[in-house]
Image (cartoon, rainbow, N blue to C red; front, side):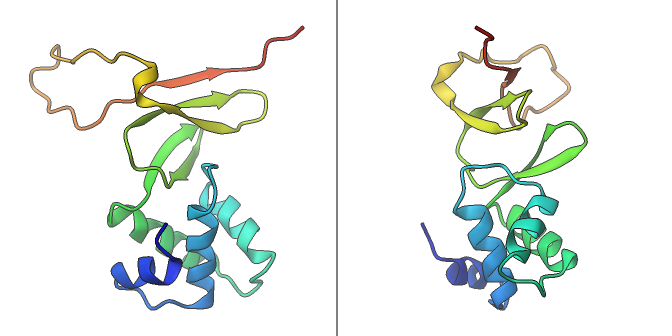
Length: 132
């Protein structure tokens, strides 16, 4: 895993303590945090962090292809550091989002939309633990 300073420099951003904390928070987790969750998490150690810094940093990382912004929770964009092909499972009780390996599902080619170029396909599975 590339360190936060290198990631920020590669994106053309000056590595400040606040930006480094945002990058570390997102890339050192398997969670799929929203910008507000990143802000809350990072502010514990970096109380001077602004909402604008979080949003600007996350959006630039998406623009550079280092993060994916996805709507997996209703009404909320989450940021996914795993940019390899994969699917997702959303636990409806906890709201947790888990990566599901690509090979778990067989995704057939989509040829019924002739006027469109398909740029991405993923399966989002929602469910909860079985009650005993």
